[in-house]
Image (cartoon, rainbow over all chains, first blue to last red; front, side):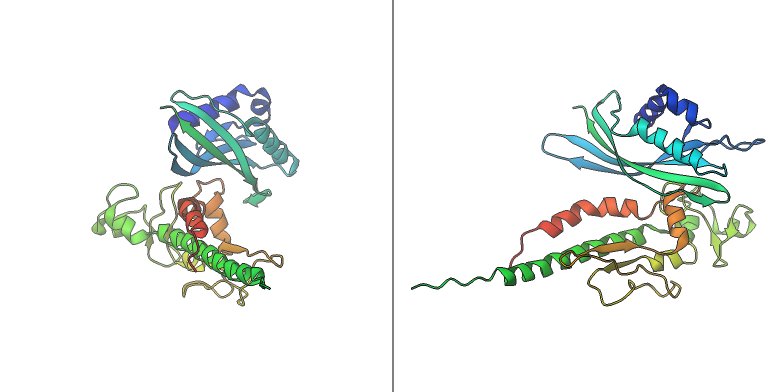
Length: 135
Length: 175
């Protein structure tokens, strides 16, 4: 699913507001280990939760769920809430353009309230990707 | 003069019972799949499935292997996959409960703590609600991640089962 991950990164990269708000960037799985400095907040990560093939008479598809997490360490919950809104604006009902696939559609399913672990707040947002392969 | 008798209420009650039973069974299938997906730490060590083979001799020498809360050597599962079992508390606590249950909490396994297990969901008069999950705190952290990589165990089980569960629930009723 490398192509899908790349398409997600490209979509975020092309969104100027996303870029400006999510100063720590968007990362697959986990932000890189920082040897000296603390990570730059807010930042977002995403990973594949499940991927189930779906076959119909005429189509070959995949039903994939992807979880995005937004992290922030500021004392106010406002920063992470704003970052989550920007992420949703970027990915809600988005179509990804990928060679070899006719249709990749992103639908938001749920998001969590901000939860705090060791002083870092986190909001998780799940999207379902409906993927139709070209035949 | 012919007489027409209406058995609609009886049929509705019978049919509801059958469907509710099926929904509950489907939920239990998800519970079973979630529990089944959680790997054994020992098996990971013996087979080297996680990160290269580790011989049993190397277990005591390796500094990377740490003892878990159970006191046994624990190998974390690969990120993105279901967690490996250490004490077994989470796995034992995963339970199913439904809105017409007489039990306040879903039945949990012997390794779960007192009070573990899912509470009875609330529903309206005609709704039948089923829940599967855990009330153990770290179950949520493993499922969603906390800055560290997540190890989802409930959603993959749900996605794996839901298609066949739907077919099972909606299959014709032979009565």
